[in-house]
Figure 1 (cartoon, one colour):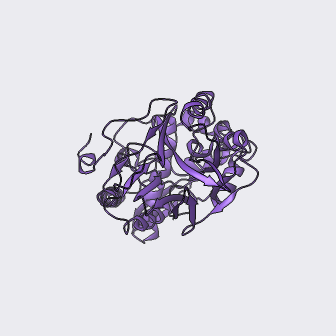
Figure 2: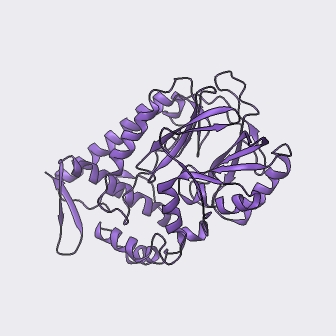
Figure 3: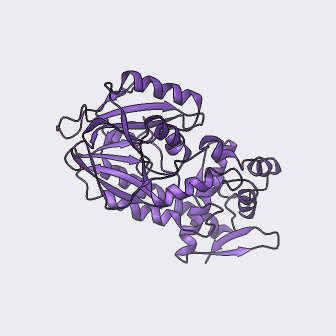
Length: 359
């Protein structure tokens, strides 16, 4: 556990559900969470090797059952684990609804399968629904030539990496091969009645187009999705689809929406362990990005920098290709945050590469 994590409280300790099993979530505001909330943890084939999924006891139209929050990527191992959950973790009750916090593959990948398997509706923000629909179409999916050109324009010059990125046009649809054809819209400020309790939607930007977190005041529980994680900072990237965006500022503005929540709120994140200490974590995230922005500004004051030049400034560890694509997007995001504030100027060189220097 790193020094920042030690400032958070983990009410469940190191306990976590085993693959294909569920764990009742306890340790909230003393309001008897279990069996209202169950935790499912599934493996991912990435450096970030797991995702947390949540089951909320529900009743819709007089039918008792469960609402699922997030789904995992499409892979046989995840389907097999879900079948184990269905067999032993749902108390013999059906899935009534599938809520997806945002359109990234580990969250929406199996939504089509779950919705069809249980004839259950999908609930998601409109922006992320349509982004996922576009991404799941192999002919127009994310990545490919457009992504390769974008990263090259920000200084990624390694031919092997560029070629591999060019070949990833089907990467998103390989994990999200389909998206349900219909959905119920979630938006910031909406209230969703789940199991006799109201869960308020808290919209977020910067990590995904329109991320939805869920907060239940009566339980003092926040399902934070990827907006608030205990151990790692949320990836905030500029992508080729919106090449001149300012997602870091959008992210920092969005997490302020969590500040009015009570200090004792139990945060259920998509990665890492459930924790208490959201105000401390908000402070840590602000400090982290303040320090990284200062590092970027200092580097650009010494001479023009590309996003690729700044990778060793922002990331001290060795990066594989999957991590490099995230890191490049995050490097551009930090440059853009300073550029939008007028602290940096951007110039496009004769080689077609953007370089940033002190204004």
